[in-house]
Length: 315
View 1 (cartoon, rainbow, N blue to C red):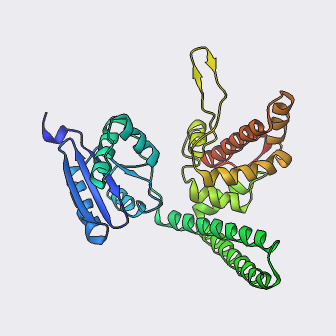
View 2 (tube, rainbow, N blue to C red):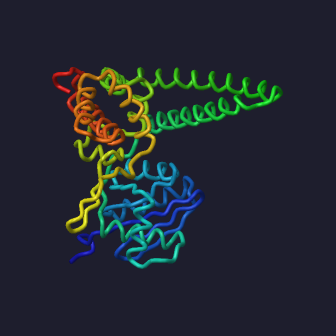
View 3 (cartoon, one colour):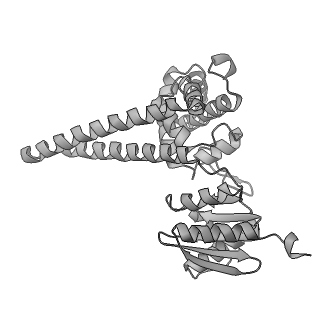
C-alpha cells in the first residue's frame, strides 16, 4: 500500500498558549505556540498530510480559532466532548496525562471511533454565540444581585440597586444589538421568523437556538434530540428494563428549550393536547415536560429544514 493511500488521523491538544499535534500512524508530533505563526505551521503541515480526520476537544472556545482555519482549508475537523476523550483513554489503559499524550489519545480516538464531522460555526455565528453567552452571564448576575437585595443592609441596597440598574441597561443594549444582527442577515431573519412563528418560541429562545445550535434544520429528529440532550437513554440489562433518563447534550440549549416548552404546553395547539394525553396516561410531570421539549424541538427542526411557516395542521 502506497503512502498516499494510507489513512492518516490527527489529534490536536489545544491549550491557551500552545498546540500539540500527533499524526498517526506515523507517530509524527508537532509542538507550536498558539499564535498566528503556530497556526500557520499547523495548517500548512496538515494540508500537506491531507488527513482522513482531525479530532480536537471542546475547550471552552479556545479550539474555535484553529478549527475555523482548518475548516477554511476544507480539512475534516471533529470537535468532541472532553469526557469522550477521557473515557477512551481509560478504556485503552492510558493513565498518563500530558499535552503530547492527550494529542496521541485524540489521534487514536479518531482512528478507532471516527466521530462525525460537522460544519464549524462561521465568524458571524460565533459572534452571535458570544453575545448570547454574555447576555446569559449578565442575566445570572442580575438574579444574584436581586437575591442579595432582599437581605441587604441599607448601605448595601444603594450599591446593589445601582448595579441592577446598570445590568438592566447592558442587557437591553445587548438585546438591541442581537436583534440588529439577526435582522441584518437575510438567512438569519428567515430562520428567526420561522422559529418565532411557533407558539411558545420567543426572542431569547430563537436567538439561543440559532447561536448555540446551528445544526438545527440540518439533522434528523433523533440526531437533534441527542444533540440537545433530550433523547431518552436506555438502561436495560438482560430481563431488566430500567427507567429512561436524559443525559448530556448542550445545557444552554436545553435550558431555553425548557422555558419555551412550559409556555408551549399552555398555548401551543400541538403541544398542549400532547401533554394532556401523557398526563391522562399517568406519566410523571418531568417525563411529560421532557417529551414536550423533544416534540417542540422536532417541530423547530422540521420548520427550518423544510423552510415552512408554523401551522397546526403541518406541525
